[in-house]
Every structure is written in C-alpha cells, then in structure tokens.
Length: 353
Image (cartoon, rainbow, N blue to C red; front, side):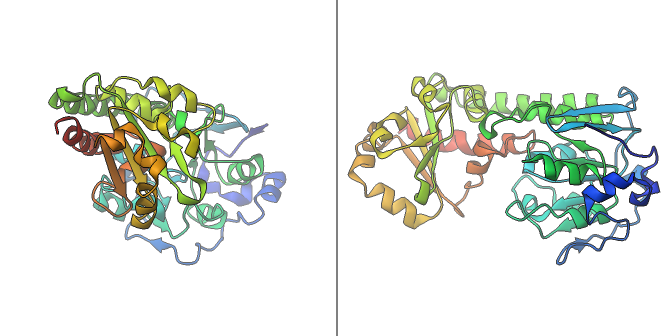
C-alpha cells in the first residue's frame, strides 16, 4: 500500500483523503495534546531552526519502503515526531536536529542532552508501555514520523501513516539484531543529512576503538551479558551475530562459542546456566532482591565464572545500570561511547584481579 500526502504539510489533516482520515480515527488537525504532555518554550520556532541546513544529496520525493507498505516524503521534512526506542531520538540528537514530539521514557539516559531536550515542543508523558499516543502525535503537526524498529502491526502503521509519512524498516528486525548504524543512516537520508550521519557513525566507532585501545587486557577474552528478569528467568544478550555481540567484539572481546546456542531462543533455563560461562560474566538484575535470590542458587554458584570470581552484577539504579538497556535495545552513536567505557572498566576489574 502506498500512502501519499500533500506537498506542504501545513495543509494539515483536513486535506487528507477521506480513507486516511477514517484510518486515523482521532487524527484531526485540532486534536488536543495528550493529557499530561508538556509543551516546551519553542512551540513557535521557525522550521528552519529545527534542523541543520540540508546537504542537498537526498532527492525528494523520497519513497520510504517499510515492511507495512510504502510512504512518501514529498519534500524535506521540517517537523519530525519521534516515537519508539531511544536510538531513534539519539539519532536526531546526534545530528543536532530537534523533533517536535517525543516520548518521555527516552529522555532520562546519561547521554541525553537536557538543554536540547528542553527545546522539543512536546515531550509526552506516554511511554513505550502505553498505547501509541496518536492524538498527541497528530497535534504536534509532524511532516515525518520516525518510528524505526517500533511499529508492531499494520493497523498502528496505518494510523500513523494517516498523520504523516512514517520511517520504518523495510523488514521487521528482531530486537537483538538491530543495526544502530543503519538506523542512523535511514534517519540521515530522510532529513537530507546523510553526510552528517556518516560523521556521527565514524565518531562513535572511533570512540569505541579508543576505549578498546585503552583496555588491551580485554583483547581475546570472552564476555557474556545477560539479564535476570525474575519471573521469566535469565535472557542471554550477547547472542551470536547480535547487536550486543558486535559491540563487545568491537571492544576487543572474542566471540563466545556458547553464544550460538541462544540465537533462536535467548532464554536460559536453570539446566543451561552453565552455558553462561565466559572469561567475564555480566548479569543485570531488576533489583537487589532478584540478585540475592539468583546468587543464592547453588546452580548459579556452580557457573565457573561465578565460582571463580569472574562475575559482574549490576542492579537497576546502581551506577552504570543503564548499560543493560544499551546492550538490549539502546545501542546508538550517542549511547555506545558511554556504555563501552562503563563495560570496559567493570570487565577490566575482573580480568585484572
């Protein structure tokens, strides 16, 4: 299905075809902001102040091929709404491009520029745990919705597409297989900032390489990262070929041969706890109670990395605990330089002891 919009977004939703309005349901031009949402001080900022100057390399109209159908950018967007996981918002921050709408949950990370965040017109109180806030997104009057790796079904995509063109992946990608570089490039192309995006990617990769060079003691070692979700057990993060494994190998670690066993099913049953073993085992916990329960388990105590003291535990709220998010779904050009420093320091304590 191809969704199309008028060339000038200011024509607003009343100019959209009837069928799209029907899909939108609530997406009217006078839709009210979401309850509890906040509106920043620059609501009337000129559009050209929201994005850096165009590079002139992206040709519009630009067809956005997504897994749910095609959308089309008639011209360079000026008002961008960002939903989904933190790497989407990170990609705009890295480009010094200011969206007009974002979700509150993606604002609290250590790498977030709070001054830049304060310049966003609407920071919704809705989080990823809530239904998509279609009314608030429509009220921000976007001419592009960045939703890479986020939209779960065709009905939600259609409602978003009735508001503005939607940037999503051409194919749905498993959460542990997402390429942060590809996300950055997709957003850069849509905003006519491809060269700037390449500089952002190169800068992040150089930062990771610098951290690796500062920690030669990690070279060739293996590392397993996992999270104990208590009710559902332990999930293996550094699966073979996944985003987290690519990050740790950039840091100098060798691929863990055991990681291949968790590609299709990352859950680690009690019977398979021994397969967590590595030169360094990092386990994230929801809280200290979950950690104490796990560490009190004789089966867990029998994992060689635990028994030999090659084990790092980090619970939510402790310094560096945001690392678990970066390893799970939050890898980006902004988060990774911060995360690899934290990971390298903690891992170095283990291998140097």
